[in-house]
Length: 164
Image 1: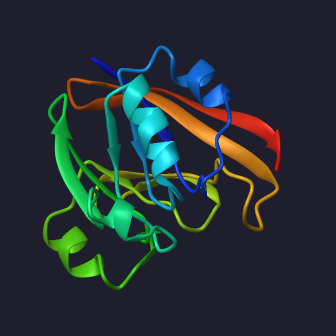
Image 2 (image 1 turned 135 degrees about the vertical axis):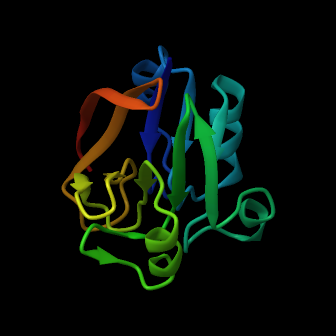
């Protein structure tokens, strides 16, 4: 069983509450637009950290993280990317692969809109954790926590950090 802390779109903004809310998590995942190496360093020094780069991330972050990250946790196939769309509106870049080989969990960021949807066609769960930073049009800053246990996703929580 693994407890996951998920966020996106920090845009170089650090909130000490990330530590508070992710303290009981086994890993932290960032779905892109990290914004600075300082943010990367803080997360890496706290917990095991997986991330993808987003469209605002510079070459320093792109040198460490990839555009797409596919991996397995607790038997579940996970695909994380920054610009991926959502069920019924997947980004054209992910469409060929997601239909050919759908993951169990598809994570994307970019939109700053929190979404948790089940794709009945592809039989996958989609999560966009919204935006944890202060830059963008979103009104509420959000994080997501969930558990993966033997390929099952459970105990999903949305955490609102308040107004941006």
